[in-house]
Amino acid sequence: MFLARMVKGGKAMTKDTKIRWGWIKGMYIYTIVVAGLFGLGMIVVPETIKSSFTWPVEEPVAFGIIGSVYLAFGLLSILGLRSPLKFTPVLFLQLCYKSIWFIGVALPLCVSGHFPSYAIPTVIIFATFIVGDLIAIPFSYIFAKESKQ
Image 1 (cartoon, one colour):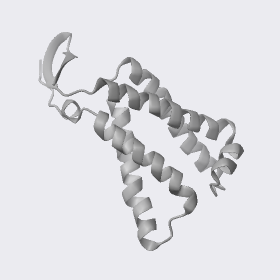
Image 2: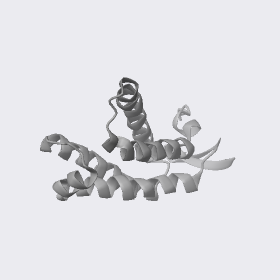
Image 3: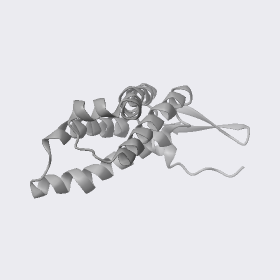
């Protein structure tokens, strides 16, 4: 167990919380590199990204929204390197939407036998993020009840 220092209302409090600092920072770096650079590519050179990954994306607005969200995750992860615990909700949101995608999109496509082969790299990348986030996120810290002071 590590001792995490939390500041509330100018007063320092201590709480025993298991925090894997290396994993948290590693996931921020992974998000910067993968999501941030990929999102930047989707916005700056969308045709290159579409052709490189053979995605049948015809709607430029939706593709741009996805790229913007990925780039936002990358930019917020830069801040996460500076304040890992403060920006943990970025990793938590990433874990949630990728898990929802697995359950709501990938799984039904697999069950129906209509899973496209071009989505296999997405499954692999999303799986690495899910596993990494599950290890890195200090859930006891996120869900700890704040004390009133």
